[in-house]
Length: 500
Image: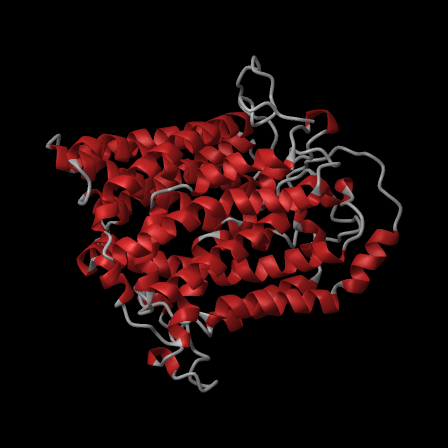
């Protein structure tokens, strides 16, 4: 089916918007539509944020050169979003949310552990994005002389929070339409922004940034992975589940990866050039990533910049609040999907209030958040990818909702693998932003890696370790179990979508 350009979500032009009633249930064949290329719109719209420019300063902050940071960014962004593409294939094979499809590996009730982790991660991300949109608005208003103080931040937070919550509550239809709009508007305005500030780039200064060590390069690489694809991998099937079963798996992988990676790659390059040209700008980005970028803009473009910044951040927050609601349901909360999204919206606003009005530093807590939760999410991702690679048949959808079915209730192997990989991973990362997490990195000294202040302290090897350990462990220990599951005859149709 060829989707017309003005209807990238594959829906009829006159279809009325309504609150999505689907929660954890399987999408019926009659409701599946579109082609893999429709995945470009939500993924591009969610990752076209101006925050991508800020990642240039974050990467150089590891003490590496432009070329090292560029390599770390390209590899980290593309590889991590490629993982999202592989997970997205599970959506069209099972037509259920990501955290429901994980039940095939973890069991119906055992899957509640990764669901809780996924929920915390997505709520955290939507909170960060909402807070950044609020601060960006206040900064622009301040430069224009229209306020910018507490009152402006309160109004901005209310408007940004309300938009995010309303779209998240409405669900899939409105999300797809909004992401298409965000893609077009932010794409055009971002190009204009780049053109306006290009004269602030000084290649002589950029090329003079000294190279860093291998450990610093790995640290930047892992940061890019956790900041991009690993922050989305636990939600990657939530949008591909609406595609027909006959959709091309290669197309799902390709369009997800391409749509999600395109904007971050272009923005990262420009961010590296800007940050490398000015140490003062790079330092300012750490405190207020979006606000710092307004300081080099002409006044007349501040309002369009605020629009592109806020829309880009809202685009990511909307996908997060939608998926966080689904994760909360998968964790065991028995309410309609839109109520779960509303609950997460309240938490998002409370967290944003703390970031905007209490916290005095952005980069430190942000990096600590990504690293700490990046370890268990990487562990989950390894299991999910290996389990999917072992399967030759589509998921038996009724058994995804029955603890007595072929996938079981709470098999010990995946749970023990996740806990073990997380424990080892946390032993190989450090977090200096929260005193209650200063126990992390406890393996760095016993393994001869220099301890918490040594050269490997900020390489964050724990993320890569967790991903590799669970992937290999699942391929080795899970093969016979998957084989036995797929030998069973398909289950008869049943009442799907019970909130187990």
